[in-house]
Amino acid sequence: MGLRATPPVRLLLKAGWCYFDQASRAELSAIGVMGDDLGLFSDFLEAFQETHLVTGDANKLPSGFVISKSDARYSDRVRSMPLRIRKLKQMAYSVRVSGRFSDRRADLETAGFDFTPQYGEPQAVLAAFRAYKSMFGDLNVGRHFIVPSVPPWPEYTWGFRLEAAAKGIRANGHHAQLNGALNEMGFLFDK
Image 1 (cartoon, rainbow, N blue to C red):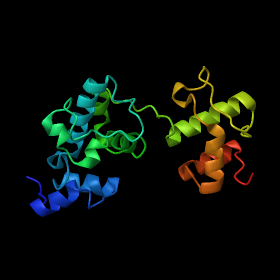
Image 2 (spheres, rainbow, N blue to C red):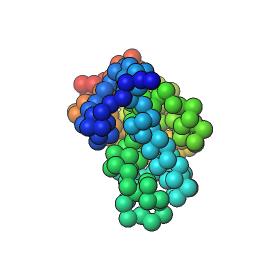
Image 3 (tube, helix red, strand yellow):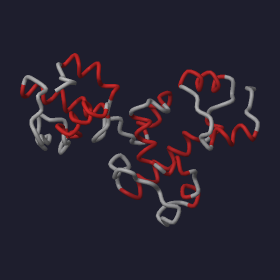
């Protein structure tokens, strides 16, 4: 039997007051301090599945989507979950982009979770720049360029304001995690 976090520690972890990187989470899980006993994965999966039934596709939620405590379409249990779970769009982003619950990927895929990058996420931005470069040979994105809603552009990039993303990267450091890949592709950071 593994070590168990005391009730106050479990409450701090559930409330999000304690943050552990993925390696630390794995170590703590291995000794039984963290894991499904905290219910984070189970709660997310339950909220995702209910949202899928309610909306028809929990993978295509509007930006900022939150399960309301007053939405009668959801079970009492899901409506009473902590806000960090009910902020389903944000939680899904952390699953896709940050690798949260990466050890449970098969369970998520079985439940219908789509790991394809979503509009505006870093990997979708990078895919749009790659498609632009393959089409035009460079990354000199034209003024007000919007990704067309036709193949060969990846569907999850359709309608993306690529020129605005380029400006955000240059002026504000948006999507800094993509700098290496963009630099290799010839992106001009000082344009």
